[in-house]
Amino acid sequence: MAEQVVAELRVRCETPPSMLREVAVEMAREMGAGLEKDGGSRVKMLLSYVDKLPTGREEGLFYGLDLGGTNFRVLKVQLGGNAKHVVDRDSREVGIPPHLMSGSSSELFGFIASELAKFVDDDEKCANISNGKKREIGFTFSFPVKQRSVASGTLVKWTKAFSINDAVGEDVVAELQTAMEKQGLDMHVAALINDAVGTLAGARYYDKDVVAGVIFGTGTNAAYVEKANAIPKWEGELPHSGDMVINMEWGNFFSSHLPITEYDQELDKESLNPGEQIYEKLTSGMYLGEIVRRVLLKISLQSAIFGDIDHTKLQTHFLLRTPHISAMHHDETSDLKIVAENFEENLEITGTSLEARKLVVEICDIVATRAARLAAAGLAGILMKIGRDHSVEDQRSVIAIDGGLFEHYTKFRRCLETTLGELLGDEASKAVAIKHADDGSGIGAALIAASQSQ
Image 1 (cartoon, rainbow, N blue to C red):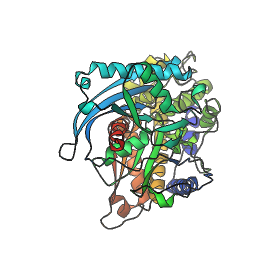
Image 2 (spheres, helix red, strand yellow; image 1 turned 90 degrees about the vertical axis):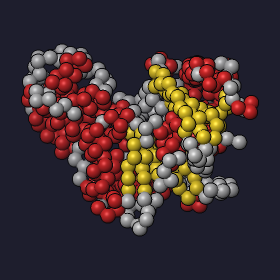
Image 3 (cartoon, rainbow, N blue to C red; image 1 turned 45 degrees about the vertical axis):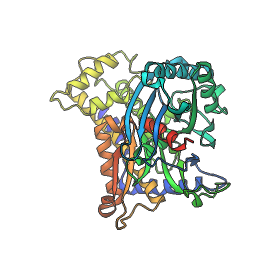
């Protein structure tokens, strides 16, 4: 029975190249639809109002705040201009207490501002700001917002594990600015971006061939550079640069070609946002462990492969996290000792057979491979949209990727890279590079604050 469940899962999760190409074509089509005035697309294609990406000439001390998951990061960078680029940097990561993720807006932003104030106070170098200038900060906010300008935007909805109702429809920059003022923190929010835009900016600071910034972490999103005259919904004067950074919000992408299983359907139905963020639920770190848990639960209820067990832990939603399935997936010990340890520590299931542990590794492989291949199809869709999916002499296209899933889940990363090459073909893939943008979204916020600084 257990083998049958896994065999069915493998069939349901199959992602042949023909299917992935259909997904890529549909992604590119949805991107185009999202740029139209009526914006009739699941991919929101939000204008970021960032029309100036960092050039490398910026100088001075700037701050970044990166909020997008269960932790947030504060950082500062000292920029030295063309010759020196980033002279110095420092950062601190802070966990968000779970009750603040569903509390009130003032509580969340109050907590963030208090931690930011501590970071500034603890850094002795921050005491002297040259020329009496106010401290400037870039705010990476990785949730859907409708931007009014480069430094203002109203929250459309929460994603991931956040659900703070009184923040929806409010300007998140104003909320942060008010909270900082209550802390007596003399700081101005110079730019509002999301993690994908930040990753794009941070990578492009060092490499002008970067065309997109993508996140594969707790959630997923992408941003890319579009010609402003190719954006029908753009109103007003075209930016001097001729370019506009588009925040895709591609987590909400949906296609009838996506290989969706009964486990995905149940997960979606029981989520905070049923019917939404389907692509994200198939490809991001928040959900992969939960999908595996649901498969394991079905197997344990229909067979005795794990022995006579107490199902309490296995029935707990989100108890298995993606780092757990990554550890099991990468287990190369002869007796799959790491799988056994994870079962014992996280699920309180002991004495599993080697046969059962091999089955667990196979389930992890099926779920992670599907995620990586669908992720690659999304990247191919971006390249299609901007005409970079074919070989052109002296043209190089770099996609910068940040996020814990991409950084730490080696088999996910390798599968993504291999699949993109498979979809592009040998010639075109020679001109496309994937680059890991470490801490891209955080440093990108500070760099965009610098580029917007007056």
